[in-house]
Length: 307
Length: 294
Image (cartoon, rainbow over all chains, first blue to last red; front, top):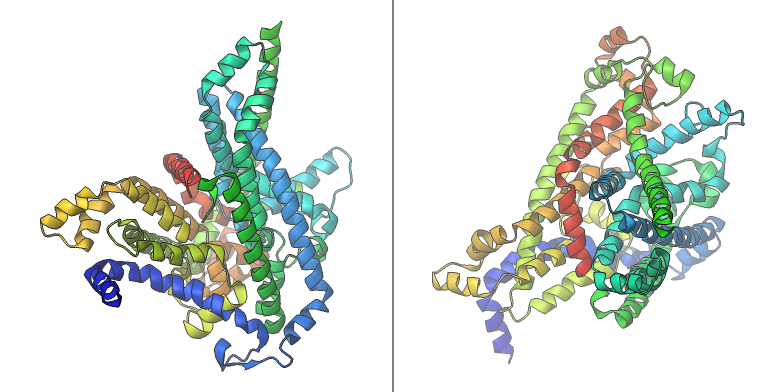
């Protein structure tokens, strides 16, 4: 039996060799960091490395420190609440926009508007940050120029933390609505036309057709994409937060998320113990959520689950 | 009248879609207009859709004033080219092994890849591994290697390769071709549609990446374009320390900081916006393939 395994591997040695580069890359950049999660229980010393550093004594000291921090709690709360907001609004916009586009009969108009709305997906958050600055800057921002023009007080957006959940939601919608719509639109165009024909013969209005044919047909796609998004609710889009908010600490009460908190602790304050404890919890919760949401997706539609 | 009612809702829908589409275009135009405006106009009238007085000063200063911008452009082009070629080659080669039905242990390899999609060690261990164990700090490889192997792309390619009949391999084998030759000469050309899509995805993410630079590159000469843009946005003063400062002074007594930011933004997104009309449909196609089965 064992000989058989070795013979099979030897026979396919070229194939194994061809797989080697990705295997090594994934090992270095994915598997080693997974093992490196133990750092949360270590008193990290750069000269000794992750695995050579001494264990924390008591073992959970990094976590005690983390749990006593209001900033960490705020980051967890912001991550979950903001992601919940982004997922909900995103769902409404993407499905809604797909339904609207699907109503368009003019092929040319449809194609041009799809191209235009897909375009923002192609630029980085850094550039979106510049765009946002053009609009929101206190002195030369277009929004404030407009506000003063119609006789209102200008707003100092970069010190108004309360407005940022809305601003970030708008930014995300601007950037990825076109992209997110594509999958829903594909699902809509694959619906057999005879359903709609039968419905209109029975006198159903266009609205009724959307309500009783399009939406139910989209249901599996909606549920699965939402479940997979919920599985990632503990992970914030670092790029967006870092590019849009950056070091504007006045905005942190509503915009500091786990990922930016960990980044700051690691790179700015050098507080590796705190950063690794927060990262450890994030990874563990994300792990459970991913498994659970994938399990749920699998129940609904076998082909949509990742595994 | 049902017909009339229908046309009212049609025009309403067209109006909503048009407004949103234009709002997607609007910031791009504003940035271009800002880069061509004089500093005074930006201060007095803010960012507008059309420059009041057109000037190319900011572009001239940008390219004259700093080797760093030329350097950064070079770095970004180099990283994008090398990263894309390497990534497509390495991931498609791995995908080929996973797609090879006659290979008994291919599923074990697939599981090995899937696990990386599900579990994540997070930023801290990843950063320390890269810096402490792999010595990637301030090296060009730091901008390429961490993104090279991508599990999602591997499955995209593998699924495409499944549709290539396995008999091709058998007959090539009869002719004495080895596995690598079969992959390189037969399967790769046949997989061109999916490789083009994946290649575009990868190229886009390399061009737009600044996270790796932010984490690993402190040396100024190695900063990619996107990171330089961020540096410039937060601090335009570094241009003054350039060796060409006197030449810049001749163009404009004061550095037009706002319009220079806009000019660098235009330069950064230029290649993407320029190529967008040609490559857009490949992205859509790739998304559809991914949506059918990820």
